[in-house]
Amino acid sequence: MQIEMPRYECHKKVWALKIKEIREGAEKLPELVFEEDGYSSMRVDFDWYFKHKPAAGGYYVVYADGYKSYSPAEAFEGGYVRIDQ
Image 1 (cartoon, rainbow, N blue to C red):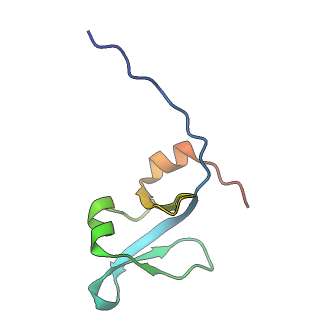
Image 2: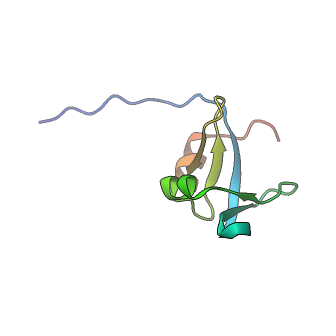
Image 3: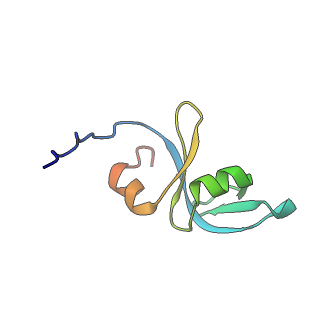
C-alpha cells in the first residue's frame, strides 16, 4: 500500500488575466482576448500555446520571476484570491 503524498498550500502572488476567447491574430499567431476591461488582446507564440493549451475561461498567469503560464479556471480560482480590487 502506498502512503499519501505530502500536501502543500500556495502562498505565491501572481499577476493574471481571465481569458475571454482565443482567436487567430496577426501572422496567424494565437491571440488571447481578456475579460477584464482596459487590457489589449495579446498574441502568444506557438511554443507557449502548444505547451500550455489555454482555453477560454482559464487564466493567463505571470509569476514574480517573469515565467508566463496558463491555469484552468477551477485550479486558479481554488488557489488564488484577488488582492487589488
